[in-house]
Image 1 (cartoon, rainbow over the protein chains, first blue to last red):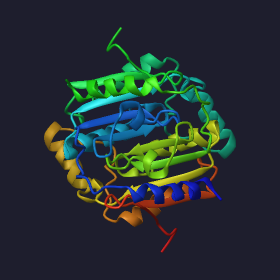
Image 2: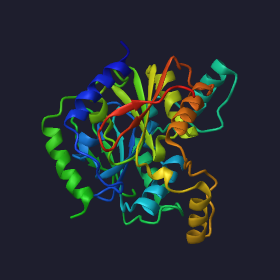
Image 3: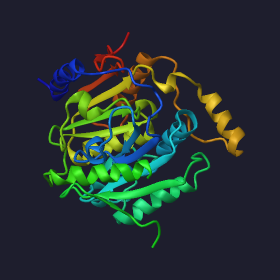
Image 4: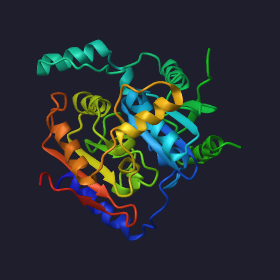
Length: 165
Length: 165
């Protein structure tokens, strides 16, 4: 049995006690942008319940154009106002460079991707870079509360990254 | 007190019973691509525990270049093999068109985004489109198990979308 099939069995159990439907707009008007890392369970880490917050995730928790697209839809169409950014310790994105990864893909496939891998050498600096990308985007109107954090995969704790050094 | 501050208080509680660190590579070798929707708690819906699976999310759960970037890093560098795609009923992406959203942003800011909003008129067809984008990407090598689902926000159940009509 595949892992996917196991997860589908879990879903049958989940549905038995499920209460729905909740409204479409997030009730707490928050959007979270976090790394895809398997150890970062956003619902647990923040105590978010179903229906409260948008959750946007990608490799690194980086503010890419796609994250801006999601935040623009979140704020313009679905009423969110606060943004929480979460990177984490022991992140895979610290272990390679964009150039290495592109070369690896080119070596394996003959094709070099047109996108950046968005690897970063400094965790806190990338959190600040992500905050800046949001603050300077014309498509994200509400930037009064954009706060960046590092999740410690050893302790489960969030540590806030000061806005600028 | 902001919602962000409330969530930080929740985090202090979460950390008290936290057991870490777990290894970086996802233990179940799965990557999930899901919509950012607030009602779709991927951990609950699939019964995923910390450390098991990458979770990639954006507006619509669409397979954009950024999702491909994340999946490429997930498979090439961190060993995942199965992919689970999740769209859902009552999705905001069904309620507008790319042209409308771009016009709205241009009217409000004077700037037209260079990216597509990735709205879609048909839920199942967009799941299939997303599966196809993964299967045909040169940068996602393991496509033996790429399965697409619709999450029902009323019942909590996942329904599998047949591969092609």
